[in-house]
Image 1 (tube, rainbow, N blue to C red):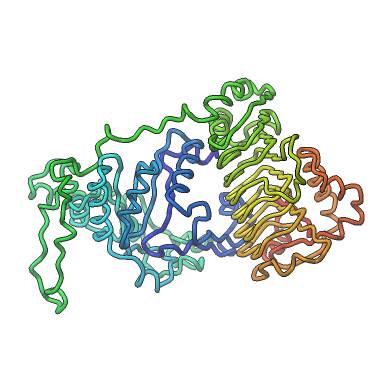
Image 2 (cartoon, rainbow, N blue to C red):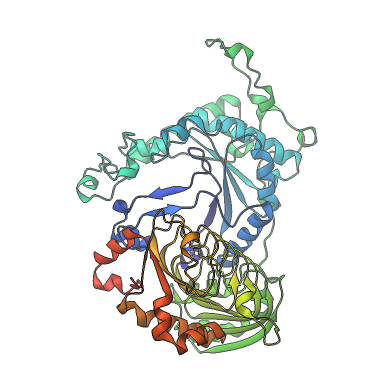
Length: 567
C-alpha cells in the first residue's frame, strides 16, 4: 500500500498489444537480491503473473478494483490499458463508466522483447484501428471529454504522433524507439538474462556494457517533437490539443503499390458520429468526473478514531457495524497511515477495528502494518486484497447457529496479491484463495478451487478441504494442508510442487500460527488440533515448490528470517 500511496497514476494492465492475455513470467535466474526485494520474493524464485485478471470478470469488477485503488491512493489517477482489437471501443466505454481517468489503446506492433514471436507477429490489430474505434465509441456515448485517451505500439516519428492525435489520442506512448536510442539492439533475449548490451539483464558483467545516456533519449524525443511541430504548422494547428480528433485533416493515400491496396477502404476510421460533430473531440479537464472519497466507510467511521494512532502512535480500539455496501474497509486508513509514518506503519494491533455484520467487497484491502480488522459476520469477494502487513480476522457472528467449518465465511479471490501481514478465517473461503500471495500468513478452514495459484511467498494453512487445481503455477511459499483422510493429493496440481511432511524445525511455527488462529477467531477446529498436537502434526501435508526449497537453502540468514521453513 505504501507503493501505491506514492503513485501519481496507477495503471491496470488488462492487456498489452504485443501479447494480449498472456500474462508474464520472470525466470528465477533473473531474480537477484534487488529484484527479489522489489517483488517480495526470495532470490531465485520464478515469478509468474496470472494470464487473466482473477479479480476482473466484468466491468462491475473493474469498477470495484478502481474503487479499491482510490482507497489506497485517493490522489492518483487510474489508467486502464487495453489491447487494440475488434470491440475495444465498447470495452473502453465500460472502463470510463467504471471510473477510469485514463485509457491506453496498445497496438499489435509493441516490441516487448520477452513476448513470444508468434504473439508479436500474430496477435492484436494496429493501433490506428483500435484508436479510431475507441474514439468513435467514446464520442457516440458522450464520454470523450471525461477521459484522457492514449495510444502506443511502435510510435517512432513525428508523423506517428500527429496521425495519432488526428485519430483521437490525447497522449502518445513511445517505448521501443527510446530504448534503441539508449543502445538496445533488439536481440529479443530479454527473458534469458543474456542481453549483450546490458539493457535487460541482472548480470553485473553484462550491465557494465550499458552505454546509454539520458541525453540520447532527450535528443531523440526533441527530434520527434520538432518533426511533429513542423507537420502541425503545415496543417495550421498551434496546439496539440487543437489537433485531437480532427479526422477531416486525414485522407487515404492514393498509393496502390501493393495489389491489395486498391481494395482497401479506410473511411470508417475517419468517421465522426453525428451527435459529436460539433462537440469537443478530446479530453476537457473541467469535464473529468469527480471521485470523492468522503462517502466511503473509512471516511465516515474509521479515520476519525484512527487519528490518534496515526498522529501519535496511541493504541486505538473502535467497534461499529458494517454492511455489504461498505467497500474496501480499512484501505483509506492504511493509506493515511503509510503516508504519515512510512511503510513500517505501527506495531501490530495498534489500530483495532471490531466490526459486526457482512462486510462488502475488498474488506481489509491494503491493510498496513499496525491495522487490525476483526469481523464478526462474514466478508465478500476480494477480502484482504493486497494485504500489506496488517491483520484480518473473520469469524461467524456470536448468534450464528451453524458450524463454522462447514459454511462459507469469505468470498472468492481472498488475499489476491497479498505481500505481508496475517489473515484468519474461521470457516470456508471461496475459489482462488491467496492467488499471487507473496508474503502473507493465512489460516482458513477450507477453500474452493484454484487455491494458492501463482503463489511466490508466505504461508497458507488450510484446516479443511480444498478444491481442485490447488497450487497451479505456485513457484514459492509454503502451504500446509490438514489432511487426516488422505483426500488432498488428487486435488493438487503437481506441475510445480512436491509434498513433504512437516519438518521438525517448522513444527513450532505451524502450531503457533494455528494457536493464533484459535485466539483471534475462537476456532473449535484449531482448538481440537492443539489439544492433540503431537498426533495432529503428522496429519499435515506440506506443499512446496522444489525451486523455492533450493532458494531457501541458498538464502542468507537475515533473508531467511523473512520466510517460513516448514519443510
